[in-house]
Amino acid sequence: MDKTERSEIISILVVNEPGVTARLGSLFARRGFNIDSFTASPTNDPKLTRITIATTGDDRKFDQMLTQTAKQEFVKTVDIMSAKSIYRELLLLKVKADKKDRSQIKEIVEIYRGRIVDLSRKSMIIELTGSSEKIDGFMDMMSCYDLIDVCRTGVTGINRGDAGISDSSEE
Image (tube, rainbow, N blue to C red; front, top):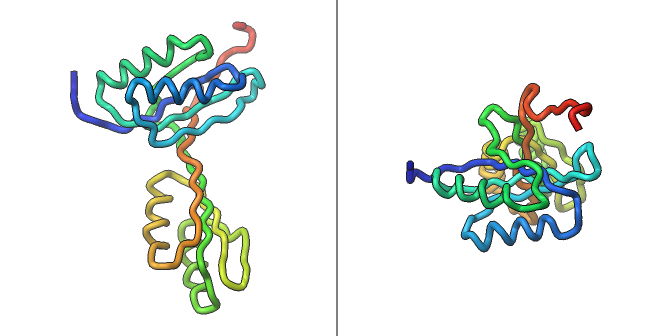
């Protein structure tokens, strides 16, 4: 098997019950799998939660990770997401912004298609969604300013096309 490390995004559909995210996080930690990003939210079915995990490993590690995760009684499905899937991340950034910096910051925000969601005399809060690479690029551009606070959601994703669509009559 290939020992080359790669990053993957794993989509896990689980039962929407208290403690499930903690149990899944604990499973990854016990097995020595590092989690780069972890997001969870209810789906259109209130009984289910979608968990999206970004992680790194080689083929053997991913096979072990998928097998161990799929064995859990609270897990309905587990898949490595396709590179063609849609991925997004949300960033909220509070930056020090006096009168002389505001127009330059606003220009950068517009180029990255972000939004200024709060403005005070000494700071502004910027909202930006996009790929992790876009967020990283934006953060690099903003690094020359005095960043007050940063909040990133982590990656979440969904498959393109008909993948993942089930016929409700199959239940």
